[in-house]
Length: 500
Image 1 (cartoon, rainbow, N blue to C red):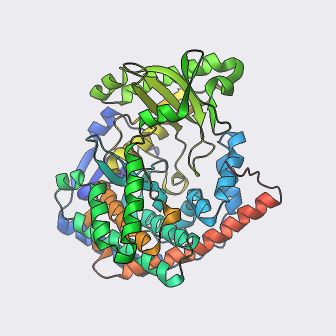
Image 2: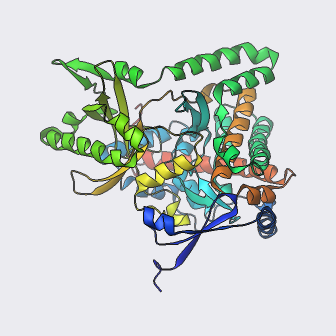
Image 3: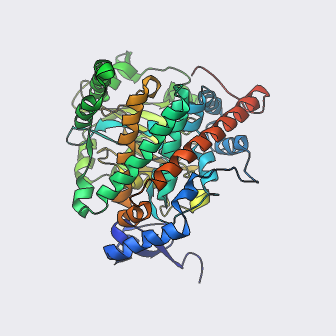
């Protein structure tokens, strides 16, 4: 029997096991899967068995493997599939600080986690669950919710990989803010404790209750203000309310006013090279082909939307597009913004068309079940995010260079907002860590076997202490890797461009 014909068993939520074959999925294949259901007692026993095999304290240990790959070589490997002229921007952004380096180093950490202990308790991983990849956005009912907001690396895998990525990000951010060892230890421990306790709260809930659960931003703000110290309450409230007000107005209309201009009577996206480059500038003599490419991409992407949302999209017409550099870790991947207009010039829709490459987890956890990386991202987001963008979809297309590439599409701005990490005082970061831990727990229970994971975590603080220890040890490793990239740039081994 070939490897493609062998049955693959995949863990799912609520103790279900899906038996299926092959790496690609289709509606027919999905419908043919056999799903087995285990009792809560059986799922609890599975978690306890994993605890016996992989003690919770073992997660607190971190030592680089004797044959650990060169971190700079891993970054250069990633650069091979990216737009060459944008790669130096990525390196420059990563070198702003050890914290920005960490944000772009998901591949390095996945390589390291692959050599560590594994519980075998899988869920749908975010894959890059650092504290800046959580944020607020408008749900379809227009209420602001707080959830994970980046799924470029999503893939099924051991639940603890996300937790380690998250808690270590707080250790790195705490150092960036100048917090002392004791303060950081308290924050790190709280992130892990929040994850464990909230997961144990979610795990016994009814399936539909878990699915509908979400964190309302305004409820969070009120709670944080009640718990804030009197000394810092006023300033914290003012900053949070100002950030929230800014988030509410960050939509396609605001993008339209900020990113477009009128040229010879036509609305165009303004250039700001190299960060924003209109497609006619980007493609030169081949601009008409790139225009056709963007139109074809949008036409075909419609097929991945539900019928009602497809009809909504069809009310808009394509107007213009530009390449736009985004984020830190994603810099160098092919990303475009598309301006669409509906009723008239006061009815804009901005779509982001973002390349989806192989997840950084795949070399260590196996290939995605989806043939399209764009579908991998979208399916992972829909499965774990509290509420997903109504325009979220994917496409596989032939590029102008003849290379097939995967993309996913979503609204560029839809009341999206992020926490101001660089301004956080210890108490605020403590509360924010509690929030992130809670939301990661909700996502993991929604996508995996919460009862088994809760059984593994237990009621003691063993896992929390181990995560806090790991976080500081890995923050040390992150600083060493940051220095390695800095030296590589200084010696000319790696190109970098700063200030962009």
